[in-house]
Image 1 (tube, rainbow, N blue to C red):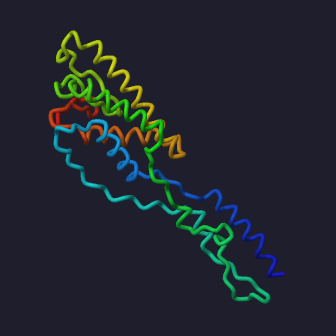
Image 2 (spheres, rainbow, N blue to C red):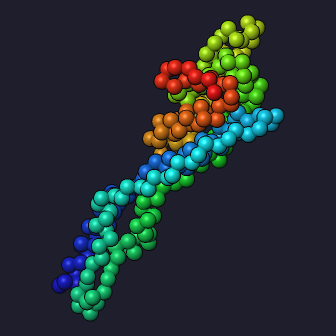
Length: 217
């Protein structure tokens, strides 16, 4: 009787495992992906590369409360008395895998197409606006015309159009990165990471926004 009593208990524990897997936002991987993307967009072959900021240590994922119960092994009676059974063995995975988070990928055709458009637009039009102080990075991951007086009248229509096109691509890439990594709900977090990276990668003399106030690198 004791031998068969362990089976429904194991089944219940495995069912609990299905709802206690802890998937967390991989912030360190997101920062690496954002840095790679941003630096390619704003890179200037005639300028020295920007110094990379110090890396923050990756946060250890918080253990899932219910999943800890799955580490208890079950004793079986009868002929197998004293044997140990690990319920994770039925799933073919270890507890560490249940806690794992995916790497952030930006190597999809859609994301790379957006990146190529932004890189070409930045080199052709936007860089001049940032160098002159006309444009600035906002603190929500977009760009804006900060000082129209620094743009020649004949260039204003083209610059405004480039800013609008770039902001559409920025919103699209934040969404696509989240979707490509299987977590559309991460879009706001992805956008926040990219917003900080645009500012971090800004070249000396460029303007950026913090809490609504403008500052110059």
